[in-house]
Length: 100
Image (cartoon, rainbow, N blue to C red; front, side, top):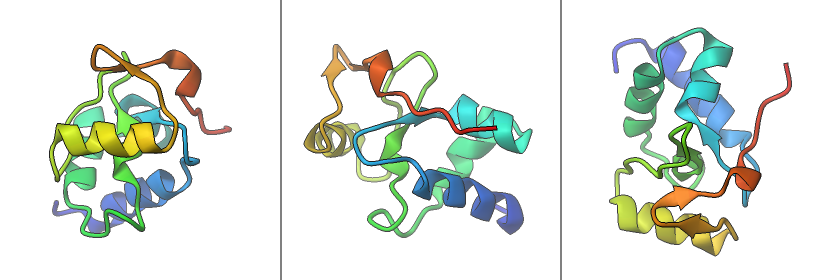
């Protein structure tokens, strides 16, 4: 990703997602006024997968989406945190929305 400033802002928001919750690419994109794909690109560049929990970012419709270590690992991490996933989708009650 070329714009380090945007990447850092995306990663800072990802760090704020509480354990056991998820947010969407669209939610982060809306806050930063960027396209959700830019959020996905920034998260794909995350080299600190433990420190910055990008596995907690999913599609707005609940689909899990991609992950650097693979989708199975992402699902495993989310389930370990208590997030329920049915047929590849995160239940809506686990979604976290940032305060304006």
